[in-house]
Image (cartoon, rainbow, N blue to C red; front, side, top):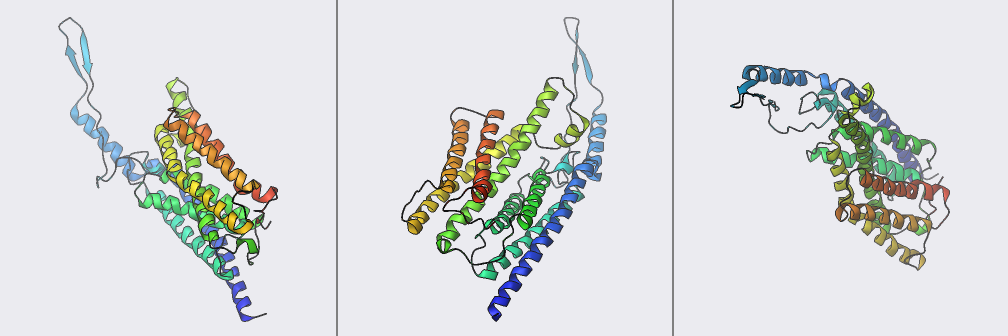
Length: 360
């Protein structure tokens, strides 16, 4: 065995250790998010804000009764007082811990985000070590695709937080599915570090597959928001019709943003990444022309990529022209993401074609 080969195996081993380590840190982040959802609304700042609101209302005095000329009376309610954070930065909650009035979120949420950042960095280094072990892009099989995909998905979430977007409510659901994705990767989909098949030796691997991974990560974030929207919309509808949701549903769903906000968020992220998904398909067709002599072969992967494109195009078109909002649009979005999921897992694992590089 040559020294280079031993070094490559060493890097591959380090990569595996880092991926497992990131899973351990993600697990800690998961429990921190759970603590945020359980105890966040009882944070000290939340209680202080509620107390200040009550004091301000009491200082203004009770409601005023005014006699009308016709002999009747009218009751004028005192306006409610809105207490903002001391910093004055934002008055929209960015996490479950903000439910009781703490605009900045509580300690549990900050711990969860910090652990998520640490896990992301550990996983990112693990992906880089995997690439360095064979000196190529780490996208040659489903295991590598999965660990890169989960890294990018968490990166998208952290980027939204860095841009001061109020998406900390996404953290618990994101980390849960990332752990499931990594668990699947290290068990069912694991493939030893190896060289690429000849058809993948192209600079288009860096262009086409990287954009596909990024688009999938953003579509995933949009899908999580859509699922949460469906639950929150059902909860709000039940309240409006006089129903009484269960205690568990109330404790969870009341801490999410309004259903309209979730619907708008899902639409915006899907619309933003759709042009890049279009480019991904075009780039794949150009690569197919270079590798196989034909730009389009109706290979299962090509076909389902196009079906996914059509599904998202229908969703965006319905939102923009037919005025579809709410549940109808959400169902279309979930169908589109279902097509992407089948293209991601089903085609690679269960369907044979020119793109059969799953390695499982």
